[in-house]
Image (cartoon, rainbow, N blue to C red; front, side, top):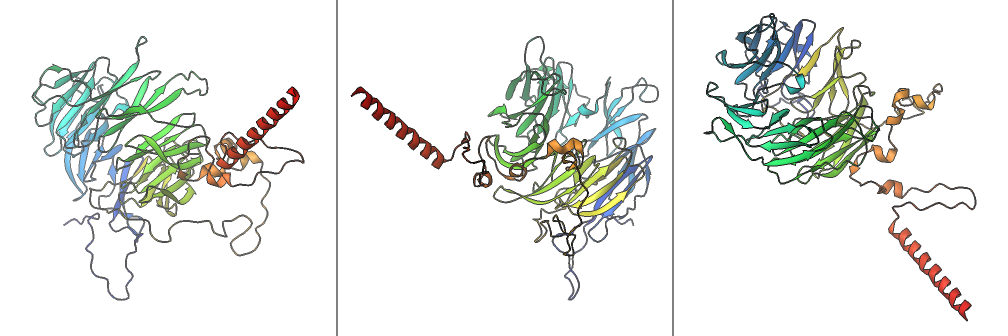
Length: 567
């Protein structure tokens, strides 16, 4: 009998005097997979022990993929793809497909898609894009795919119930009934289509992009699937459509329930000459066509990232030149509702329940991370901040209370390893590696983990030991050596990413030009004798009233002077 380390433990009434599990501890063991050169290895993470060996052991593979529920693990080898059952830790299926470079499980893990090299070391003369039924290992569909781009993978997309599959080809989108792939596909006519993406949710729809050509603007359309009894080439009226100018490429971000889609457009040339890397735009479209508009972003610059909440009720956008802004938008009307603050950020991650939000800056940014807790009234409270330098990836755990960051090759070939953080930015574990290619959590089925609120007293605040001028024992802190102003943010290249104090913190959304309460009540600087300060454009009510009185008195005085002159 093989024990499953991910099975929920039997909970008994605690004995008197024995320590019980607190609210901030992991109630169910979780798995972590790491891939080093030639080998993948799994660990078990619990609140009592950060890492322990998994019974699956080491697996020789060049890439790995979990199913959405974590029940299956596909490991790619030189000659075949091996599928493991993580519950029994046994080999479930071995599929012979040499030269495989990409795999994908359908949402229900009924099918596995593979892409092979189109040469002698891969598929050879056979079709190189295949779909396999996991239960039997039978190949149910195959076709030729000439080129491969990871941004467009998987080329064959499945609905959440695995009942419908679609694939975008030249001028058409092919729809299949997965219970019978041999039946001729229904072909939806979309001339000049460049990209198509199927939505999640109970009512799937496909979003298509047609780029601009010969002065004709590009367009994004949302189509429902063709009727089940239709055959051959069909034309369906789109439920939503929007035209785009100066957009060469798009990326679709569907809401988890499929009710709306965010369209991140990009153009190679910035007509304003503000960016060497072109320009980006973000648009919002409801699948039923009730609303389509540009997302109102109040700062110039690129759109770094947009991410939907798992509840589909709101989304976060990180945008603008550094220091970038992060704003929470209401998905019902596409209106800004809350600000997470400005700073050196380009990454946002929601935890699986939409309770905690990570705002971070990776890549060429120093790695600052901020953790927010979403309250019941829609406000976001900062519960911790830290720095994960040189991190490449960040991923929330299935229970939503741990964060895994990793420094992996080939993005970075030094200081490889992964770290486990608590939801308030507290570092729990650091596991260094000489070379690491991948580190990720093992997914868990829905319902295994419960959404738990923040634990009492877990908000990280600045202590006296962290405050300037103290060393933690009450003695004055030794003066630090001089550092030039451009190096005070960690590196000279990041000084421009520091935001003003009134803009760095979270708060209710304020339109541009509106002064915050904190800054409005601040005392104005005292200038030299006789100097007067010009009132800002956004005056307070009392200032506007006084200005109106002064103008009326001046007009009255001028009128009296004119009357006296006439006499």
